[in-house]
Image 1: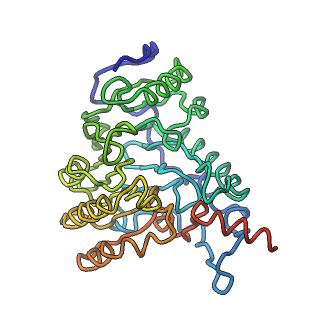
Image 2: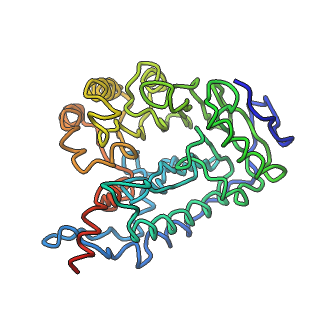
Length: 362
């Protein structure tokens, strides 16, 4: 479909891309400071007062690849997600060759249970948005899989200065809303980024690291919300796959890319069970569970992280119990983004009603 013209900064077609900066290992001070800050680590609301969860020490943040062999270079750092209190899948990946940030944005659900976001959600969003912005500056490459505001944020444009941006095509297999949003984003970062590359169906090499993108797949079971691209990051025998918003996966096209890439670690948004019986049907849930069970059969798979859409549901573990049982049989860890950081799951949106009720009785 037609879209507004892209800015002059777009530079096409090279599939071997050098990082913008020489790789230097950092302690990710921004992330450490945010996660270990008093306002985030000391819970303002403890919904289970009998056995409050205590956060792990910040030092454990940097043993992130607990699912990988000790001493390996690939590090996967979740930055924000529903299990950390906001809508997001922002993830930083350090391969040793290049530092990659997938979908640097976070947002809040505008209305749940008839309530607007609780002040604690607003505070968390501010903290994690600041963290994401700081981590963009540490990255060499930024990936944008689609143009919903929990996956891209035009307000962070200044942080993109000097970065290589690999992004979903805004003209092919998209919808009018996402095309407009992309044009707005590109206009804001025009002249600041190192280069733009359309990512759909392509691979990019950074020394020993390959970043491969799927062809566009639907955002869910149909194309009403547009399309996304899935992302595979490999370095030698290490591999990570980021599904973006597939709402399951509930379709064969979404699942097949995961299966072909044979990842060790998968981060998936999961089925949209908080809308079960409304915009997400029981039959889609069964398909999503079946497709995730197919992913579990991969001999390479060691960890499956589920977050984002699924973690908007307080009963998500109960709903996904068949998957947990299958994963246990196959010795695959099923975790959330928070648990990858060894932090307690903090479903602020799903607990929004309880937060307001607790505040009212305090």
